[in-house]
Length: 90
Image (cartoon, rainbow, N blue to C red; front, top):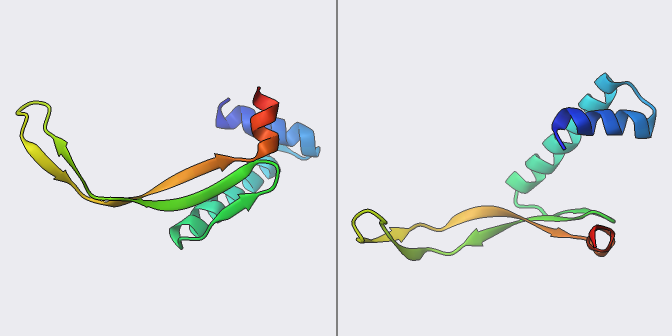
């Protein structure tokens, strides 16, 4: 599903214009992004939980030379689907 298809589905489901649906989707994505930037957990009941975790520093290999390299730690966004979402996909 593309963003345009999602906006269209929101528009039909909420019985609002596509422009309003697009603005609502953008506002929701911005709010989730800002919360994650602050390190907060975002829980959407019935959908899932967005969270930021720190991936530890690790060793890797350069595929061209085989040389061992250090991969620095970094923050990643993880998503855990809610039980309702997992069951609806089955």
